[in-house]
Image (cartoon, rainbow over all chains, first blue to last red; front, side, top):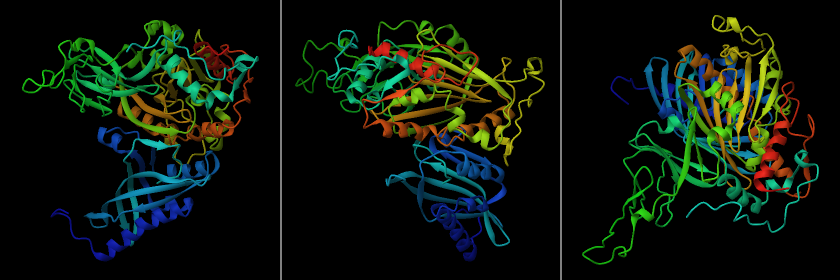
Amino acid sequence: MNAQEAALDPSTWLKVESFLADYAHRLDDGLIDEWTGFFTEDATYQITTRENHEAGYPIGIMLCKGKGMMEDRVLALKTANVFEPHTYCHIVGRPDLKEASPGKLAARSNFVVYRTMEDGEARLFASGKYLDRIVVEGGRPRFRERRVLLDSRRIDVLLVYPL
Amino acid sequence: MNSPSFAATAAALTEPLDWPEEGVARVPFRVFSDAEIYALEQERIFRGPIWNFLCMEADVAKPGDVRTTWVGETPVVVTRDHDLELHAMINRCAHKGALVCLKQRENRESLTCVYHAWNYGLDGRLKTVAFRNGIKGKGGMPEDFDPSKHRLQPLRVATFCGLVFGTFSEETESLEEYLGAPMSKFLARNLGRPLKVLGVHSQMIHNNWKLYAENVRDSYHATLLHTFYTTFNVNRLDMDGGIILSDKKWHHISYTKRATLAAEKEYDSVHSSQFKSDLAGPELLKAWDEFEDGITHSIQTVFPTLVVHFTLNSLAVRYFVPRGVDKTELYWVFLGYERDDAEQQEMRVMQGNLTGAAGLVSLEDGCINSFVQRGTRASPEAEAFIEMGGKVAESNESSRATEASVRGFWHGYRNIMGFH
């Protein structure tokens, strides 16, 4: 943490840590309808790869600009997209939190996600890091931006549920 | 070692394959899971008289650029030397056979095998051998060792519209002849100007490579499996399109045209192909009319493993690499043009959501082929029934409710494999 960044007060820290854990737990519990509630109206959600990120390429795996596009993703996966049913288990590392200005935080945390398919196979599906911009308004954290940077360029089978 | 002539080394299968008498309207399921057939394909197709897609020319734009890739299961390295010549060779040291290049992309003065430091020029010629004269007069290579007799095994290379192709066979016709005029013309429509890479990733699909080759030629399944457009009532304003097959039926183009042509308005009605839909985030489909021919969606294949799609303004090259009889890696290279302005690039970026491993209209293809793989594995003697739109493999410029391009693929496949 550099000198310009004020120390984060412990109650905000706890609130944000619990917010980050909650996000993963809701997805892992299949509560996909609650996913968009973690974001501000104009938030950006992107899944991309380390390779694209380092090359400065704008197209990754998934990109939603605004909650509307996230809602479309959820509706699409529930009603349009065809795929073998599966569940996720996120293991998220302890976040590195920085307060850029009052109520505005930058966070980074590492993750691995195991995916269990309908046929019973459970395998490591993704590893990487979350790069987040979080706003805390009325005591409530929300993602202003969540960038999911995958270590690998390769997706096994397909990606349909957000990470 | 020279590449084997396929006629001379055509090893017979332990159990011969008799193709069903219905011809291209049937496909024996055995071809998707038989390891012997898979091995024969490596020889007759990938090392045979065809042009394989290797990489984008942008990958090897500068002198010293090195890009590793594959031709079938064979690891290949593509380089650009200091005279700007392109080279492709097997990524396998002439000494012990180790991979010489390990990174997907890098820039190097020469190529050195890490095992015993054999050093090659960017053209694959052996330059130096470590300890060739031994140490303190002991050891070293024999007197008759001739470095010019050892090199990285070369492939012939040719380029077209920013795509680099390679072939192992001296018998392969020129790339121009291989593609043919109609295919070349359409590739040039889509790729014939300075390209800009916008993103890359890959997808491991658990099926034989030919199931994806069929799938991408299958215009019958598009609106049935991929229901994103209909679910969101996307008013596509499209009329039906058509199918064009190349002379040998190896390659194909499938296209859709919008119903109302307004070619003269092409450049002053940037947003005329806006779509009405129930999308909460309609920016996803924000598009502009890019070409005067009215074609809004197209997918083109070049046998065996190259695909170019242009859906609205989303342009991408896909290529797939066999990773075993029941595994295939599908690569996506999303493209724009150097000439694009910021708004146009943004539209291509948002439409990037339609395809790829998480593509709203393509993600199903990641699993559907594995459903066929799993469904057919235990029934090698049973066969697929492919009669939508007829029993022959002919172009059809009036309908896409046809499996003509799929039959075309099998026509070409049977010929090159000698399966009659």
